Length: 270
Image (cartoon, rainbow, N blue to C red; front, side, top):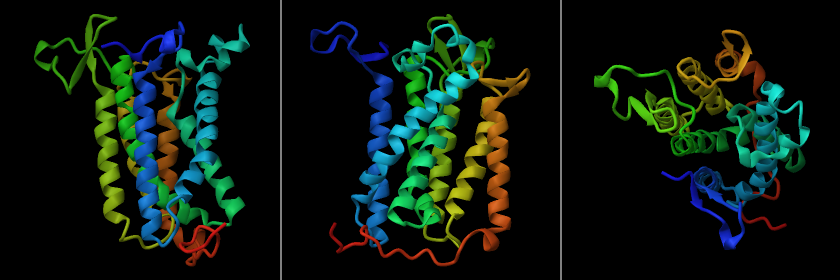
């Protein structure tokens, strides 16, 4: 199918609306709704999630682009203006997560909101957004895996047909989407059963990291840190380790009290 939902919007040549952008926008919208509802269950104002988005989204976009450019520098060294040509593609999810995390830290500092409580509040929205966003890779025919030559395995969802190659490849975008939905379900289950603030974030690090270590090894378009060492696999392994350490040392790392008395409490007005 056409990767653009709308071409030449308002008759302006080159002003297109890509399906990937629509999918990401829907993922963001659902994530905000989910976080807003959870905030209200915690006796917080739901609009906190919208305010948080204004901190997270710009830095997530910058981080996603910067991460990709850094590890594909040879493509941009000769023409630095192409760094800003995001319509050509080139956004990396880990860069987006890092940028978004910085935005969340700034929000927590500015509003004196307990960071670990904030992280647990929004992290289910993050993994849900990642699960939905992977379907943009299906539209763009990217982020696929190894070549599938066995005719009996040339079917979706195990494999996906790549038109521009005329070949079947492992549907790694689908594997990751389903894995992320599984992690999302686990986070929702434990949301009311946490023993410490930061537990959902630690669970996300372990769950998402394990899946990404496996799935990234199947992909054919990975960014490489060193020959044979994929950037995302290395970072995912680090996330798993951090998540485990968060569980083991949670009493030393996290304060028991995560009370909040600021402007986002229900019944307060700015």
